[in-house]
Length: 142
Image (cartoon, rainbow, N blue to C red; front, side):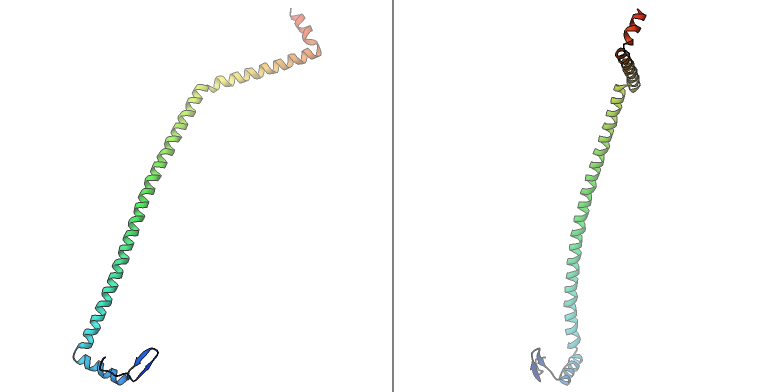
């Protein structure tokens, strides 16, 4: 475009006559320069696009790898916590079983019944003593 002369210049730059530009394009097409310049520009653009896509793919690969690593760490920690929880539940169950065996709840229930009967008897004797009837009953039993 160096042989084209601008017809005017404004704030956006030089302006060219449409017919001059069309003539130049026709001449370049005739000598096959026009298409080779366009192909060269398109090749540069496609190379830039390829680099951008490769860079984005690399960034995605890094992010996915980091995510998979975190997932593996989370999975391992979850397994560890689950195992600890199961072990603690097992120990608690075993402890409760030992307490149940040591306490012998059947015998404990009989002791409670006997203590309740003894308490009722003591209360009855205290009532009889207050009313003065306990001495009379004791004298009659002797």
